[in-house]
Length: 457
Ligand code: PMP
Image (cartoon, rainbow, N blue to C red; front, side, top):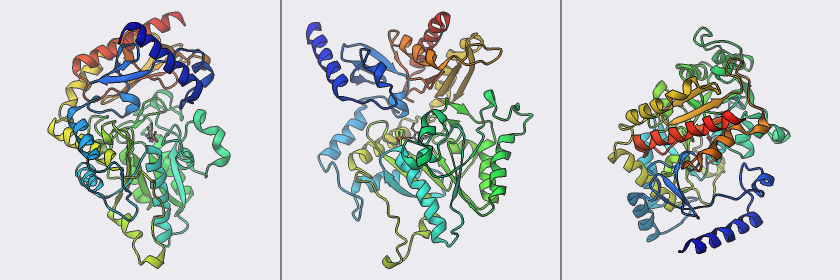
């Protein structure tokens, strides 16, 4: 393709995008005023746009890519599955690909989780966990246990149930009249502690607030829903050590289920296969999506214990069935990609290789620690949030309208990185496959973007 042909094609796609598409989490008025970056293909951990520019995929194509793009083993697995069947249903039928995927998944998850309920997005996996927890207690005759506890700043997806357990005002407040009531406890956001305390002197008082809710509603709480170790979408809010373990103990003391949403943290992002491992926590229900398929195809799963599964057993006429299911649940192409991705994690010893990568990223970000407009750098494994502040001493935030995080990400583009911020937090969440050199380059581009933008705003 000549340069002129490439330009013409880009122009045509740009016009069509602006004519027909409505982009998620995007203010379309601004979008329609700007030239879009159109991803056309990929090479390893790079995305290539319609004009031929290459960028490091700095947020793993929204936190899901694991081994990079166009991985020969994953491509081959999907192609082989295409030669068998692209889709068949799990409603009343089994399929080879979904069985093999469930078998592989069970090898990696905490040992108390034995049952896999497939769906197709993080939000649906959470929706399913909520309904399973609710129905579990109804079926056991514990009908009063129908309430949920979650954390402020939590994010679990955009369907009405998952928004109900979410706690991000900006996204969720407008839908409040549509949501069911959930008890929200203050989040463990140490940099801006909702209780105005300081760790460790606080003795994790925020976990005490969670327990207070349980004490006020004895016998009423069905489940606590949390993102383990890192509240991703609220700005990579990392939890203090011991916090998740304390939540597990609270649930145990009060007879409630612990639902851990590993949609973002799962499949190696925090340095271990699952975040719960780092706190020695066994959840009763666990949700996974994003990285499960290596970032190839939409697949999600809600994992349950045998005890929860058994609550739903009974003769046909007992109507104890879990009446829930999505058309593309356990789609064979997605399952084939997922099985191959998980197998690749084992054969390439991906988890074992993470400490050196995590250390390289930490080191590359260290020069930012003293920057006058960097309030805090939060990192767990390969999940990073760099919180920008107007004033480091007072921790004053940049004005929302300034779009500081967005400007930094825009500035990183011509340098060769694709990033997406969360408000004033610059996020790095690279594919686990990035080399130490690539991670260092990525951090350097983010740093340069931060320096450029904060100098002028
Ligand atoms: N849970 C968590 C913790 C997430 O980070 C996300 C997505 N960012 C979701 C659920 C929702 O996943 P999906 O976008 O696949 O519905």
